[in-house]
View 1 (spheres, one colour):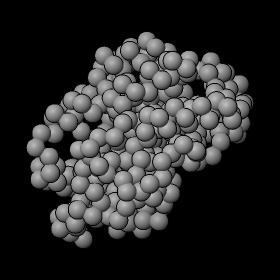
View 2 (tube, rainbow, N blue to C red):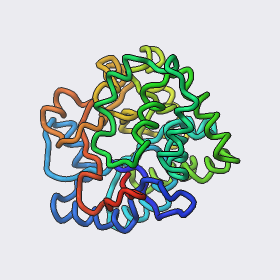
View 3 (cartoon, rainbow, N blue to C red):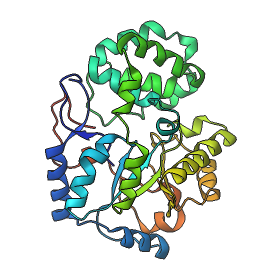
View 4 (tube, rainbow, N blue to C red):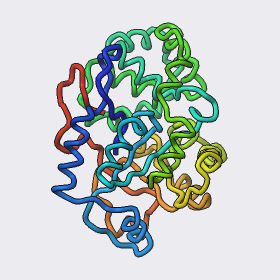
Length: 311
């Protein structure tokens, strides 16, 4: 699982990303140690209910990084990847809340944004059961600077969903002059998505707006799933196979109902972020919750936490 793959930007000194040189080194490591599973081989594993050695590459969030930097490297090395795209940035022209958090932290750092957020958020803005559920299970493997975990947990998990965008609107207005300009250089365009497919890549859904799916009622989850598949299909045409990865994706962020809704939507397989190998049992009994490792769990990821080059 990859997210940002890019070069350093001096305007965002705290931004968390994987350096392009390290990305290429990591692919070489995977090739030498494990080998890669082709699209045809992976689909055969799904159809036959069997696992096999090798790596499948996935890239989340629809960033322009994936077109500008990842696609040329994959094409040069005759590799295949699955690109999971949230559709609201494409259809509504806005930056998702989860990425607004990354931008704020990336430019100004955890201490400053944590202080600004703390001044805005009152206790009644939070969902107490979410605080208890997610405080010890999120970001535990990330080596974050002071304040970052507080900001991410508060915005992504603790805040009442009805207030999240309002709080971030306030922070973005305070810290960024032109959010629309950032959007236009942050995400892939419809034409770039289409080119990914033409180059042999798979494009899958990452929902419409990147919510914690378990926090939504069934009909709202259905809108996130079907709306995203419809939007992607309108852009790239045939989505075969339909595939999905859960926003955030950790324990408690989706439910049995979410998996059932994906089955009803004709989704062939989905990924969580449970860090382990895909087994035959997964392929036979729980194809809508396949595990995958974060790229940070392997060699060739810079570990300097200030600023960190980790995703």
